[in-house]
Image (cartoon, rainbow over all chains, first blue to last red; front, top):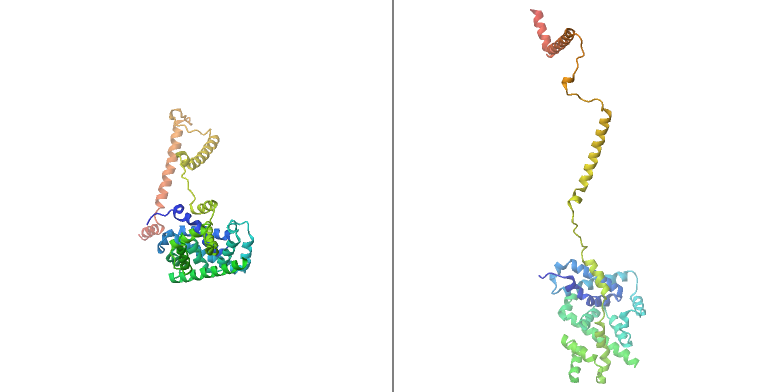
Length: 170
Length: 170
């Protein structure tokens, strides 16, 4: 087993982990905290990652679980999803939202974030990160067949709703 | 450009039959500005995927997480011999001070009582040698008698009593 280096093996994953956490928490600050915590945990347990093919899959799993925990805690605090989403949409100075200053892109962003959690994450990992079905199955702890079904549903739903709304808009 | 190929790819993309490479080809195709009108509705869906991939964390995050990962540096301190025995020096100084004070007080109290080991300088305290001799011999006699008395009393009382009894019956 090769010697681990935090700077070479874990730190370069920060953006990918951040994007995944952001898809779950929908909040930049929270996602950042999640990634930080996840990286520290992965580093502390670097000896036990052998269950996963790569340290990247291990990082993704830890990040996903921490982010889900955090969003569950947030739900427990009686903060409704609509409220937090409205809040995040208000924050236009956020660079994350500046990226989507185009109305159509904004719409797609909203449509994806409105998907059920699993479809949302699977779509993030496949269409944005470009991960293989096998890796996604490992990270999400579901079968590859299930991954394909989720991606299929997510793509269909986003396409359908986007064309619908965009068609009316034109 | 083979648009039929793109048509086919797109068709398979919606059915989740495309490989990662083919999906990447689609993203590249849709990032171009000129394309037949029939593809335009889908353009933003793929553009969104590419834009989202650029979302990430700044370098301040690196600094923060690295400060949590790297263990606090313990600097080796070079100890000189003097620094090492410093505590003992202190103790020794305290003992020396006490001894010195003791000596000074002792000397100031008993400064006059000097022991004189020079026998030649001794002076006689008598005038008549015969009187002196008698005094000394009577003193020695008293001493020898006291010693004798203590010797006879040294026997256990019961044993001494038995001896007396045997003498009386005779």
